Amino acid sequence: MSAVPWPLKLQVGARRLATIRRRLVRVPFSLDMVRAGVMPVLPTLPSSADGYLVTSLPVALVGDATARMPGALVHVTQRYVRYHADLSIGHGSWLAGLSTNARAAIRRKTRRLAEANGGRIDVRACRDVAGLATFYESARAVSATTYQERLIGDGLPDDAESRSTLAALAAAGCVRAWLLFMGDRPAAYLWCSVEGDVVRYDHVGHDPAFAALSPGAVLHAAAMRDLQDEGGFRWFDFTEGEGQHKRQFATGGTPCVDLLMLRRTPGNRATVAVLAGFAGAVGLAKRLVAHPRLTAFAKRVRR
Image (cartoon, rainbow, N blue to C red; front, side, top):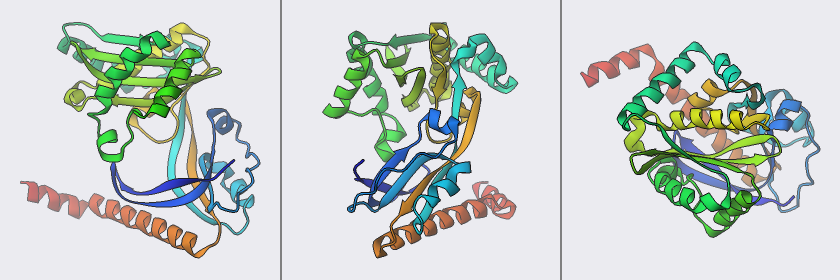
């Protein structure tokens, strides 16, 4: 496995302030690996590489991972729960397993969006090459409006290589994708790839003009019903990162970290120092902002 230039982001919320690039061998844990809870053998580290980035590493395996690279500079870049949903239990059982608040929220949001759209929920599915072109152009129109794309360049990919990859997946029957329309305007999209019996949550976005109607949540609820009605799938993999909708729709999850393990070089020492210092400063700022006295002061200022 080769090392690639990897951006280590200094980021607050969705706003990226700076980026440090290191040549890293990325070792991503799939959902099956996360659930198995077994540390694999790390690939050989090329001489040109600065180190490894192990993503979705179960917290319980951090010690096993660091033992594979004794003396490494270690830094946790992210902590989150890797959520998943059991698709094999059927839609009724899945829905019944959600919290009372989550079920009520789905009903409320679906009803409100339908009322704003002439009494209907207009969801259109794409599974093959024939529907890909129409889906892609509409989804790209939505993606261009999202904060993910505008602020951090993380929307539905628009380069020729990515288009070719998505087309190949569709041709192989390894795509499940959906669009939600408000009138004749696309309001949200969800693109998932399929690997075996696992459906991956790859690309998602909604037009902020419709944010008050929660189009993303309504679309995702419809997609879950489609997948469960279709059958043949075991898991829905929400992949890395947190999110309210992930917590609401999941049937389980595993605490994970993204773990950076670097060779001991001056440049890598500086990188870890900057990352750790920035993380500490952001954490301190969050604690200060949450302090009751500062919260009360902010309220007085706003009045």
